[in-house]
Image (cartoon, rainbow, N blue to C red; front, side):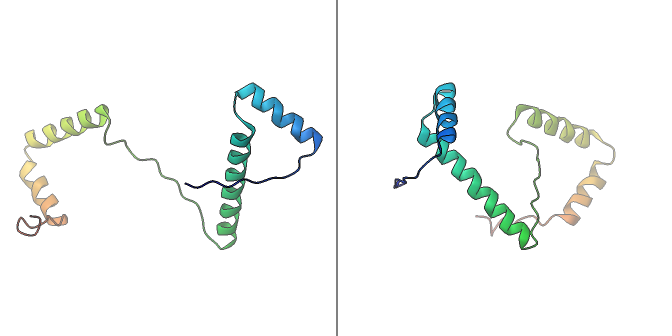
Length: 106
């Protein structure tokens, strides 16, 4: 991505605080200012959307790539396969799931 430079003035106390953070974190002034600008622009975008009646929704979902998820999925599938109601369970799944046609999926 092409970058551009930006020049601006800082009050002395803000300059001292920025320099202290640079020394403390080992990060450059540019990195810190870019991050701060990015966060401010995100906040302003959020506030604009809220003013338009939008609402932020965040959802945590299971990590389907984790070993724990794979182990639990395997356990659940084995329990269903061994269940006396397995045929009824599969019939229900077939009734609510639209499986792709073998001919159209090739």
